[in-house]
Length: 160
Image (cartoon, rainbow, N blue to C red; front, side, top):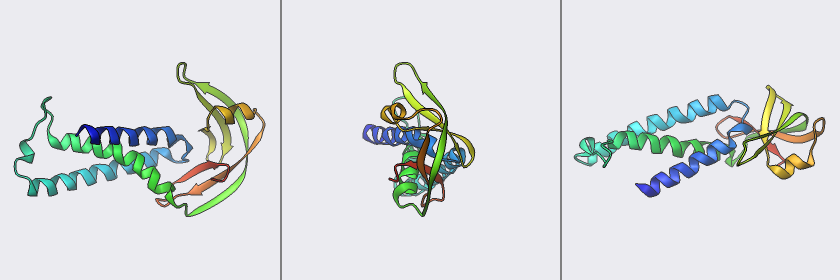
């Protein structure tokens, strides 16, 4: 179980790191969590059918198998959903967007962000320190708005 937890947490952090490039990230997050919950519930009932005593299993902290399965599945799906969505974009439209503002978040681990006037109004994006250093407020940057396999749109810098 520890290996599964590490893998799930890694996928979850990947998902959190890249969530800001999505135009409708709240809808994406809700869809992923709902799908993960449904998948975990179905998987639990299938496993419970074949493994006797699964419903009474508790770990050393007295947490049952089902809550652990749900949390691991949600964490895993959060990153996997974005990987699947971005695997093969269905469409892509590129144009130049103005940088409205630049900002740095965090103290110990800095997050370099730019705010653009995008499709849905002001969009906050993070592409790293070198990107941040090479652009200033008022610059126009070329971004592509890609639509992924799951139908969610996200910004791509440099046409990648």
